[in-house]
Image (cartoon, rainbow, N blue to C red; front, side, top):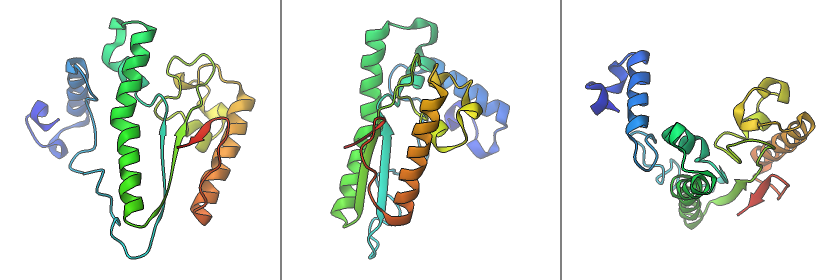
Length: 188
């Protein structure tokens, strides 16, 4: 991003950063235009701690779908190609690095649970999109009713899955107990 701005990121205004983001998205011809900056996500803090950690790694089945939609906008190729691109990008950017991180942590003696969120809300063009778990973990259906990723998911489903998600994540934080498989979460 700094090369587009012509200055360090921390010296740019919000308007300059937003303009640079729009430019980078419009020029992206493959891959994700953004990612962690200055961080090797496969070298987590605590990897070599003497006390084992309990780690939960999750990703969403269609994590890349909103990024594919942003990148191609009105130039959509069609549902089948969009699904192929989403699957490829999700695997390359989210699930494969998540699995690799989990493997490295296990080799270092840590307890790791890996899960994939598979919930594809009714009528959502994004499927099991990046951040689809946020309505389950934070707030209620009413707080997220206008979020495009939810499509027309019934309030009772969002509320039920939300109770389950908060219970599973809370139990993991308390005990390190791996979440169990549910309708919306697969253990991988």
